[in-house]
Image (cartoon, rainbow, N blue to C red; front, side, top):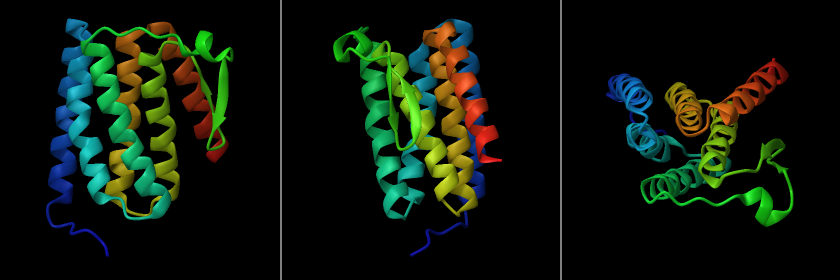
Length: 164
């Protein structure tokens, strides 16, 4: 059953403003957890709004990932997944995800999941939220690792062009 849309536009506008403020503060203050916290409400609302099987699992996976990201950033946990797995990357749902520090891997996975949501959902609000999450994931990577940000940006551009 479709979720009510009476306040969805207002909620999405508020979530957009919250994320914009969070990104600005997080980058200016060099505090990634501010960006993560400002993105968390959008992810939670995405979980609420999604209804399809594949979109529901993608939303729940994003919620788990963003909570883990917040914990890793707050507690300054460093873990190089590429060294642990002995691989530089793998394909996830048809999208290549490059491994490295887990704190940049989590938002990279979120960006992949947001692309999946954008492509597979029909609702304009879930698409809106997917775009917010994609932007937020980029901002998180930038605030943690500007070099990783360039790689993620390159990936995003290639995927966007591939979808056209």
